[in-house]
Length: 90
Image (cartoon, rainbow, N blue to C red; front, top):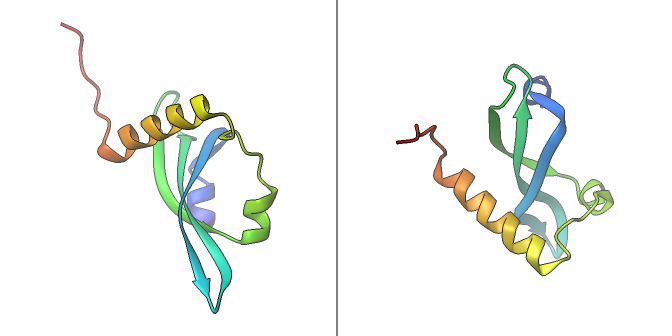
């Protein structure tokens, strides 16, 4: 986890929950997609999956309550997961 922390800028990061680990009816962790700005690049970002403890997950600020925001976030994450490449204008 420290290796990932050293690559992530404190600002501009987003989490999207993907799935949860559940044992005997108790949620043990949330697996999330992390989209973040990288420390060593001004405009480049990174994507990683991380597991978050349920108490920590529940304490995070939610911005996806609004249907329009939720739709925009879903589109953004599908683009990121599919791969983003620089394209020059014609």
